[in-house]
Image (cartoon, rainbow, N blue to C red; front, side, top):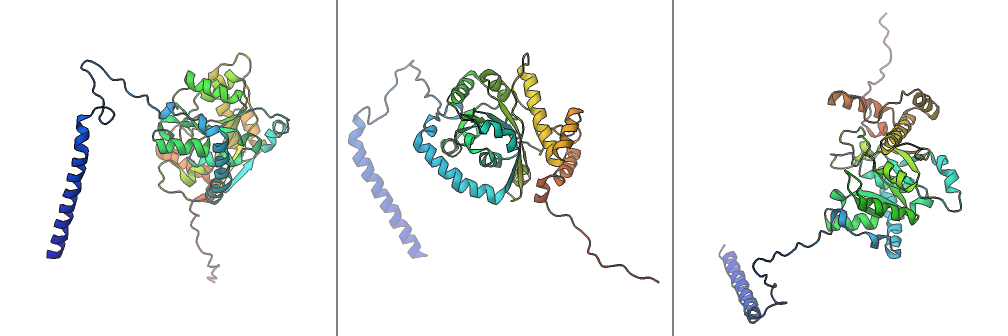
Length: 339
């Protein structure tokens, strides 16, 4: 015990010696002003705050330069593809609905608008979108989540080519930025819900994607992502590997005399039709859609436990049902002859 006390005291004396040495070196500089010391501020003068460079103000132009694009291509083709394959094993359907556009000499930029259930959705979508649009794809990410810390902002911009967007409304600054990107030939990935589903059912679509499509004339591709919520939904601490499915729909355009609200409702209905197709088939989904019998993406308007029950039944009929724990079955012991 005495040896430990001696070592502790020796360390304290050494720390005191170092502190006195630093003070003796810094003492001559105390009489000097700026830049050795912080500049003084006269009384009555209010120093303006430094501009916030995070959130919606984070600059992402550097992430679209050649060097950053090469790094992102390596990340997308390497670690991201491996992670997506291990966790999600996505099946992609509906690419034939984009084939005519993909065969053009100069395919137009598109706005991909999927439902949103997991942080895994972006990685799955990047792998599922055809290469002609994937190579110039820009992801609209929530400014208050992905760009609230500098390291998160840098990673999101570099690995995902993400740009910050206000999830509540599309301001003029964001709208102008999106328009410049589209004019530059870049496609967009936007989640109309604005955030991940809190309970497994979709939320109401916001009008940002519809507004951008109407203003720029860019077609919107409705997309349904199935299974990611069961793998790594909101509130889950760790992912549970499973299977996913991505279904692309027919590209949509605003029609004459259609305002943003109606266009947005049409986009949500198109995604609901794709969700219906995932649990049945194309023909059955088309018949139900034409008869206005498509089940809403938002689930039944009832109590939380009934919504959870209905979600479980739906997932059992989807590919995501294979992500759940298998049903318990009784062993077959054979029939007994009681005669």
